Length: 364
Image 1 (cartoon, helix red, strand yellow):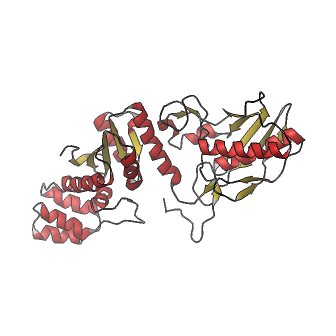
Image 2 (cartoon, helix red, strand yellow):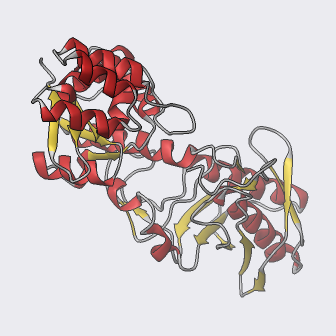
Image 3 (cartoon, rainbow, N blue to C red):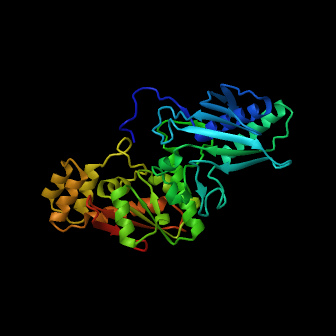
């Protein structure tokens, strides 16, 4: 995450929801007046406003289309540089604002998301932003505000392959997201949002067993170990805390936490965010744990001077000492303290080749 983080102050950006709102407001004003406001200013949900330039402006027969280039600031957002397009057309009297998916916008196909199955993946907060912007234009020009709004992101279906949309049951493209309209660089809000929606989908599907993995190797390993469906897999990454805290109020019957040895050592030592920028393996504590399971003094002293957790694991394995099991048990204890009693926890440890090296059972 932080490897490509620029030095110095980071520049904020605008969500797809804010871009879609600006495009829709400009298109509606052009449909009413024959002229596009460029740039166009729209209000943000938590106060303030943003002013965005148009990348396209086309008036049709009873409709208008505007586009805005998404600027995510310094955040490594997959949609940075994409064009967010809104086509506004006259709707039936009394219809209000209706939403439709254009090119590159996904459709909801699984329950548990904040939109019903079959709806375009334009989230509730962006929908409300667009409704308010349409109403503001309608009030300004004494119009009814009954319109259909079609949002498109050209190339969005290909971009969506780089996201978790498919796993969440959003097929055919991207989601229009953003609760504040503002992208905070390197906040990882989109990742945590995806974890939460994954839990929601699992709950709605009634899944009895879900696995949260710290990386791709452990995810593939736990998937094969239990033959889990895609909907039962959470790409947790380093966000153990964000996962467990959501489960406290949105429990699942059984969660398996799967990860590499070093990541789970950090969890065992009480860290709920596992990225190297915020947490490190405490080698003295790991050596003490090794001693507690019967390692001789010379081995524990060697462990204290080790450069990596993997070296300590190799030492333990050379004497058939169950260090990975001990780490899993302590990691499980930390995780259990963060969730409600409604969620049982299992922790399993894989090595870099995806081999199971340690575990602590949900009922152990």
